[in-house]
Length: 580
Image 1: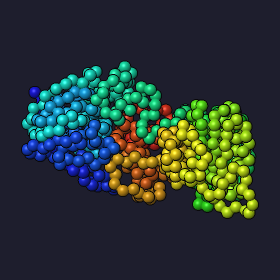
Image 2: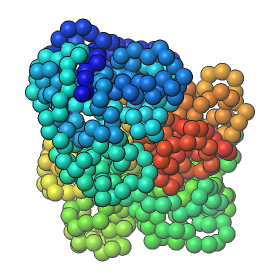
Image 3: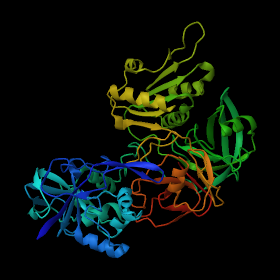
């Protein structure tokens, strides 16, 4: 007979952790007497991070007493108490390798349905004082599981647990967990999981991506088509020529130093350069390709920034014949195939990847309707105006819409040019088609405003893609407060190990002794990061590896994709460059 041994609740609280504060509800404690279990949780209980825990599909967390005994043996500990694993129900008789998704159980006056395994999360390790715990729960097939409340009612410790219905497909909690987090998945079982109605939407989306090859996370760009880089690490490219497009924009053409052919990039991708001579160690920066994918060489176009060490060096000192180290073209902000309308929307130097897309459309003699919407301060600062105009003229269905935000000389504005900014009203006047796919590049505020305006004009937010070379949106579940501190050297004595370069942050750091992982170092440097489990399970931290080799301690449960690194459990084996 299965039994509810302990009913545990706890409200979220702020807990100090590694110099930060985490808002978490993982601290649960036993309560006596009856408690009402409602649609979202048990009375007196709460969840701190509703993105990963709580909600209708994850109202009640269950863990088993036999797993308690198992972990006491594995971890050589004997001080565990009910609620130690963050669970609401500590139970006897419902093991993860027997309970199935879709099973229903009656406990006291309430009825429940099993929806998914526990989400891997570093906070269970905080509660247990064991940082490896999220990984261990998965590797040892003892995650625990969530319940949806089918019928609200009172429950208490000692209640009998009666199964009222078996889930279809005989998909156990342990198997479901392994299908998502462990390698060597059985495609048939993945498809079978999608046929279980009770499976929570989040896990269904993840399994659908594994079955159909779609994006593997909510943060993936729906229009992206990632490609393998053309070479590993940095390759010497020789400067063929430099051209000043405007007083503040310099174009640089690069060819292989050995005279060999360069792999064709995808329109919209970027080069990451190691610029010797601009600093010690040589700084690393990324620049969009502004040439067409079928060009014999690569062209980048760099805006000079007053505080930009590398851009000032390139503008002032770079000459034909110089050699730069370059990583292969990469990036997922690429022109997706299709027949529908395309909006290419840019501001300032953000024009470069969209110009590359325009080259691709022209080379294909595309008959897709194309809207070219660009914002510049003035004609003198309007880079590639003639080039874009020529390419648009070669297309059968194109519209050129340019906005100048600065003062303009007296007289008529050129055809297709408007004063001011592309406001929502200005965009509405262009008659943009709701079925269009949009590509945005420019300052963050510009892209945010365009995304919002296009959404209000009826364009599907999933069809609006953007490129940004600054920090990606962070995923730090539970961490309270936002740090605006710019990336910096870590505190303490300088390291003596391999050089770790955070490419997006423009920061190079020698590996200090005592750091556990690249994620740990990034946190110490205030480099924006993404993580959830911090133990090599969930792959939330997967980051592009531009150059170098790493060692894993501990080894991840499943290796990352080619060209990626799991920063939560990786250490540099040599100098590395990562896309953070």
